[in-house]
Image (cartoon, rainbow, N blue to C red):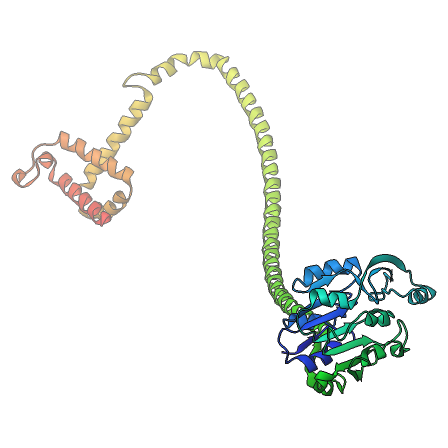
Length: 433
């Protein structure tokens, strides 16, 4: 896995190249500033190291206590002596806080606001005596122009970091200030090893072999990756996943939209077809309504005509009832409506007699009888008349020859009548089948 670099100028890459063989090492960071942003020690902490973070700004102190629980986090300034000191903070530029009044004046001259804080002041010697019990593998000093005072307060005979890294450029410039303090390091058996354009690296004589690892700038063989790029890649991967998920959702949404469009089209077609049907039905209903209205008008006209006809008929009937002829014929109407000799009954008897004579005559005509029987059978009315006539003939005739072979009810019929009855029954039987 690649080494993640958090430092501003890849200082942690160079230090890791020289010290990665040390498990759970120890560091001192003077002017630690932020626990992650531009931090030289963050990558080492993630590798299991620990150390002392010296940062006088209270806001950064809280962040260190939260993010670096294994470390010793001191809200003090380091200097040449103990006491207190005024710290000049530049809120709009991270890392520009300094104890140097000239540096603060320079920041003001360039238009930056400067805020003054009074903070405790301790020497590195006092801090080491109190908190260091083993080897210190590197010391980093970045105090914005106050490096000389910090180094004056360090007893290198008491505490000997293997590597010392000191910022050597004046704040907000490219001018080096290392001549003001370098003797305070090299005068205690440290040799200069590397200048990276911002910091100068020194190696203790007793660990001179480490200097060989500090002879070239960070490069591809160090297999490192800046945390900014790593975070960007992580965000890119997350965005890729989100994009993939969004794309899948988009595809599903498109499919759903297509389905909905098809459903809408089908529904619209059905509704249009139904609307056409309803329109035709409405037109038909309108036509039926017009026809019904015409029929009503015709019925109303017929009703008026019928009412007029009825009224006229009533007037005529009243006139008949009031006439002399109606009164004169009253006895005749009375006679015709009652008794066996009323005109209707006399007419009925005459018709029946004629029918019986016709049937009796037909019984003597074999060929004519057979021709007429199919016609009689098809007419229930004629069948009933013929049957009743034959019954009357039976009541009026004597016993026939061969009565022993004839049903009891037919014995009184003449032979010719029985033949007609048999032919009629056979014809009815054939008609039923």
